[in-house]
Image 1 (cartoon, rainbow, N blue to C red):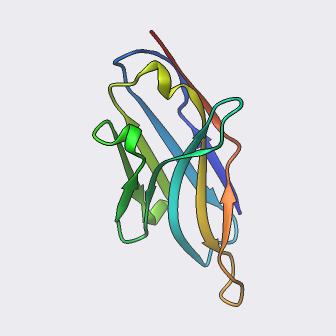
Image 2: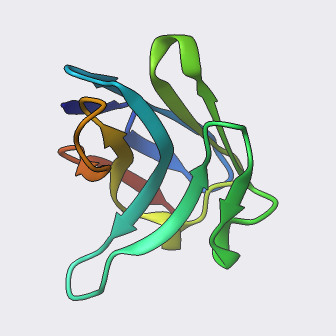
Length: 120
């Protein structure tokens, strides 16, 4: 299973970006998908998650500004980030809970990370 994240970049404060995450490979069932972010010297923190049924969960710092969604048919998740702030600058990692085959347990996978930089 591979997760490919895209959509990061440089944006001014108040601007918007949309991140995409595509899951590929052997996928029997794709459970929750989500985004975490990390800055140097800090622990990885929750940004947002979405279940296969569409239930969402957000980190406190992004509530009201970020929206997570997914396309189950395409095994993709999206993170719409609006009103970006300099403190949103981080490497954003896509994650997904996947059962690769029916006889295997669910396992968490991580993408390679995409840099988001917000200038003031």
